[in-house]
Image (cartoon, rainbow, N blue to C red; front, side, top):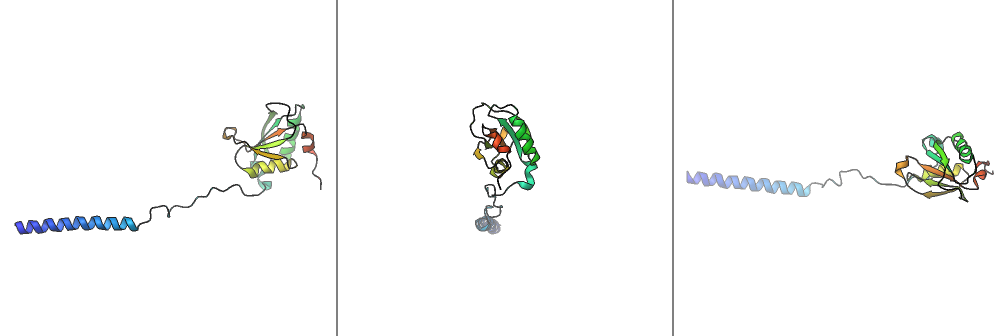
Length: 152
């Protein structure tokens, strides 16, 4: 029986070694999973206008000029243009010379659409996810010009 036990032991060792070798070869030839995963690219917002989606652009209008009713008038104009103006009120101060749009969500197309609707005023990136807005309009002393119809 000693010969048979030795043969069984040798066969068992060979079987284990063969399984380990097969496992190693399978793993070495298998993809790591990186190639199988879909590639997700972070792209900047496309250069499009949000004309058909303005109702989805969330905006606030802040009076930085100190003129009574300025924010309410610009709010009415933006709502008439189809934007979702969530709130309006006063800015942190009343000495802004130029009106501008703050990009709050990192969607420059959304902030750009608001700026374009107001005659192409400037856009500054000031991300703030806690506001749940796409854009903040800061009205400066030039705000009355924003309500004028664009020159053709």
